[in-house]
Length: 267
Image (cartoon, rainbow, N blue to C red; front, side):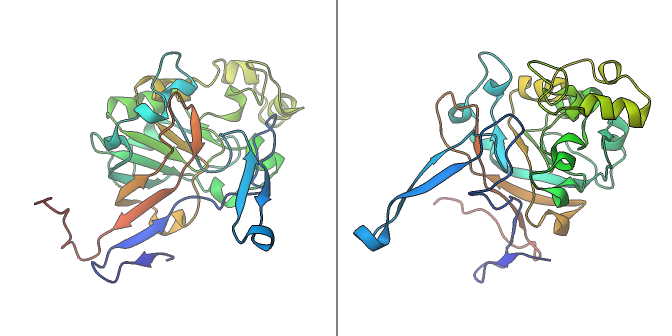
């Protein structure tokens, strides 16, 4: 297991985010991260970077306003949706798999009311600028998203490029798509199914989750394999951005192996 232990209290901290920076895989149709040093140590003894990017790059948080008109922006996400207890669930899926309501009901560790939920399909291991990572990934089904909302979950995170199945996004023939050529053709050829009948609604799972008022995190990674089917305390640190739709986020899991720690009373 890869983690850092606090020498004072014995808590174990796990990184659940991919490394971000120049060359980070960007969603098809989006610009790459453009970054350069505008001030350099060799010139001024200090360094400053400038960057241009689409916020939905790498491990990132989505606010409700991303999909829901009039929804909360990043600055309006309640603090209790950024820090709390939850479950990290291993639900392995292969190419074009769907996380169903049965998958979520029959987990090794039960989802409790008000949990943070992190879904690990194994797709984080394919994180790259590739047709496979973006176009063949699993996603959450409509019924799966509805089940998570019924459990009043505060945050949903997943290790895939997007919440939904890629055939339910603009990567295929929805809303300005297809952004990936031959995706629908390849799906029909390999599955024998009509992609528009299998996935008729655009980003349906993501809209259901965001309409419930909580944030989502996509492209989870880091040391997530160390925590499959584990309960943990989770911390997400997005920008406090008014009307912000998304931004890179650091997601950290905390385990207390001793069971002796507590939050300070503030006295």
